[in-house]
Length: 146
Image 1 (cartoon, one colour):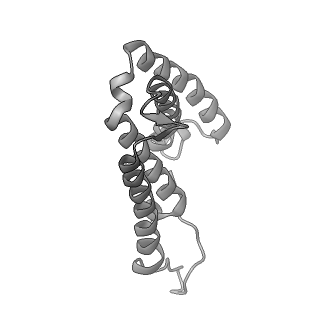
Image 2 (image 1 turned 90 degrees about the vertical axis):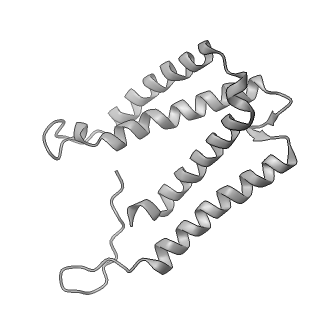
């Protein structure tokens, strides 16, 4: 159920947007230095984000460093933002304000992002059964995201 929560669906839609931009024209305009700069920037921002989100204990089964997906997500998001920004700035004819200038690519992007969110919301709120508490009653518990 957590994978279809609206917050995760938004992240999936952004991942689709990033992959489409980079596959269509962004990656072709990136130099090795640009990839390295995006990686270094993502590492610095990741340390700050993980420091802000840290809850003790650090180690152990329930420790913060055991939440690999959360730690990795705090690196991937800044990496994608910085690399797509550099790619779009280097692709002035193909990209404007982080969106493709080609109408067909823009339509594919908007349909894909809308489809991801719409399909996920339908699955989350209509197809999946609600969470039950220990007494069998429907619980109003928001899924824990990692």
